[in-house]
Every structure is written in structure tokens, then in C-alpha cells.
Length: 408
Ligand SMILES: CCC(=O)OC[C@H](C)CC[C@H]1O[C@H]2C[C@H]3[C@@H]4CC=C5C[C@@H](O)CC[C@]5(C)[C@H]4CC[C@]3(C)[C@H]2[C@@H]1C
Image 1 (cartoon, rainbow, N blue to C red):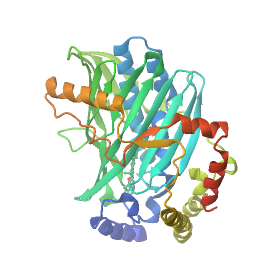
Image 2 (cartoon, helix red, strand yellow; image 1 turned 90 degrees about the vertical axis):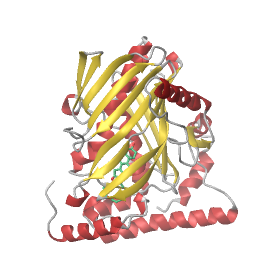
Image 3 (cartoon, helix red, strand yellow; image 1 turned 180 degrees about the horizontal axis):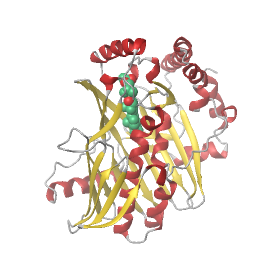
Image 4 (cartoon, helix red, strand yellow; image 1 turned 180 degrees about the vertical axis):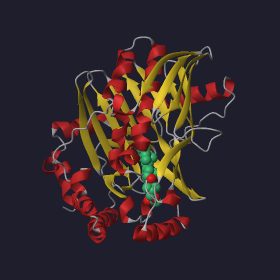
């Protein structure tokens, strides 16, 4: 992106100075107008499934080893959307709107082969910010649920972000579950006023059928490396045998090898177009749905009217503060519409334990421990009872009342 000029340069310079006194809470930073996005962070859950065909492919594969490879392939195909789609579309990473507690993002993908895949994303915590989501395709019995928050730090002109939370993929037909941990990232390019995400360190995928993947992320700075590089290894837990490797750039092309021979090359970008998410027109949305709730802020950002953006944002933020104060006085808490926080999930603990054992005994690595990925306020799970109560209309009164609390 072109280097900054004139006033943008000076506001960016003062912004960089402000980051230097960064306290770790990304949302609290006031970024200059040109870096503000009108998209709320609650929308980012959609990045998991913009290729519905890849998302449902594992369900149709009866060989468990090939299923594990298809899950790894789907996961790697989400990285470009998750971490570089804004830079590609908007020229740089942007600062998303900080979702209010209870903010919703609902939609579905319609795909001729995969059928309907539904998305439910809810901001289940504001302090610290935690987004929970459930993405499911009934036709193929594929269900993804997860939650994530961010712990950020600032060092040598780079924002370092550690993700907390996990993703869980369930294949009903095979009674199989996959635990997926989330990559750490850092924001490069701040000094040029054109920030972009680079992934780092490593994540794992552990399947209940006995397959384990380790995924390592490196960037340009790495020894002779290219930006957005990834190298994944898929193992058989039982034999410790390395079955497949997938490597390349998660923004461009990845190569799958079985042992040493190439078996497939798959592309991202125009050869692998994403499916558009269908969401209701704003006037039909629930008041808590993100694009309706932030409509006035979004309009101000589109106009580049920084003052109006600030005024409309603080109206929402003040309404939220009043709501929290009222709940405190009444001794009530906000009812999460679709998710519940629990202390632990046995299936998740079993997968973490299995992965940890494999990492230690076969790979000689430090095993992941559950408190590591899940360090938010509990393990957030999709509550199908709550979901059915909403869909059936049994919760219509609570839904209506909740909508009235959001400033229109
Ligand atoms: C806070 C200082 C500031 O505003 O700097 C402006 C710069 C745009 C850099 C900070 C923002 O960069 C954004 C990138 C966002 C992550 C992108 C993708 C994901 C994956 C998704 O599944 C979960 C959320 C996550 C981790 C985003 C979290 C928020 C990030 C780091 C934004 C930063 C505020």
C-alpha cells in the first residue's frame, strides 16, 4: 500500500505513539479513521466456512485417515479468509468494531452441493471480548462450534496477539470429533501505516479417531522464508507414522504430499472462489444483529465523518454501560442467547490429553494443556436447547425484551 502522506501521516505517527503506551486491550485503542472498519469482530466467525464444499467434504469420506486429511485441508483453506481477506480487499488490515455484549451475527451459506450451512455468532463476553460461534450443516451432519478471545501485547513496533479459545469440529455420521487450536499472530507494517497479519508458532488438530496434525506458521523474516508460510504434518496416533504433509503459503497455494510424493496441489484465490454469506436485510434483522445495531456508525465511517462515528459509537457504548449498571443494581446478568459457559467439556479434555501424550512421547514436544487454549471465562458451548427455544418462538418474549435494550 502507498506510504502515508500529509495529515494521515501525522495522525498515524501520533497513533503509533499511543500504541507504545498500549495496555493490552486492543479494543481500547483509538485508531485513526482510515484504519477503522465498519465490520464488527462478531462477523469474523464467518471466515471459518466460506468454502462450504471443503467444510462438508470430510463427512462424505469413509476412510478415517483421508477424513483427517480433508479436515486439515479445510482448516488450512480458512486461513486466507481469516487472516488476509481484509488486506486483500481493503489494502490493509483494519480495526474491527468492538462488539457489545450479546451482539449477534446470523446468516447462512447456500451451496448447490453442500446445501445450507447456518452461522450463529454471538459476543458472549465484552470484558474480556469473547466471540462464540456455531456453524452447522444438517444435510451432512457437520457441526463446528468454538469461541475465541485475544490477548495482545506490543513490542518493537509490532502488535503480538495470542488467541485464546478452541474450535471443535463434529462429524455426526462418523461420531467423530476434532479439536482445533488457534494460531498466534502479529501485526506487521504498522510503521508504514499499512498493517497486515502474519501467523506464527504452531497449532494442532487432534481427532477422536486417532489422527494428529501439527501446523507450523512462519513468515518472511524466517530463515529465507516467504510470508504466510505453513507446514503441516498429519500423523497416525497409534503407529506414530507420518502420513501426509501439506506445505506452502496459506494465502496462495498448498501442496499435499503422501510421504515424499505429491498427491495434490490446491489453490486459493480466484481458482477457489468463496461462497457469499446470506444475511437478512437490515430492516428484518433483530435489533441485536450486528449490521443493524452498528448501521449509523457504519454510515458515518463510510462518509469518513470521524466525529459522527464517535458520536454514534458512544451512544451504543453508553447504552451498554447503563445496561451493565442496571444489571448490577438488579443483581442480574445478560442472558446469552445461544451459548453457555461451562468449566470443562470431557470430550475436549480427552482430545487435549491424547494430543499432549502424542506430542510428548512421539514428537518430543511440550504437550498443549487445556488451560492454555481455553483461557477465557470458561469453555463456551453452543446450547442447542436455547437455539431450539429461539427457533420455535418459545423465547419470543425474552428476544423482544432484549431487543428493546439496544439503542435504535
Ligand atoms: C489496536 C491498535 C490498532 O487499531 O491497530 C490497527 C491495526 C489494524 C492492527 C490491530 C488490529 O488488527 C486486526 C486483526 C484482527 C484479527 C484478524 C483475524 C482474526 C481471526 C478470527 O477468527 C478471530 C479474530 C482475529 C484474531 C482478529 C482479532 C482482532 C485483530 C487482531 C485486529 C486488531 C485490533
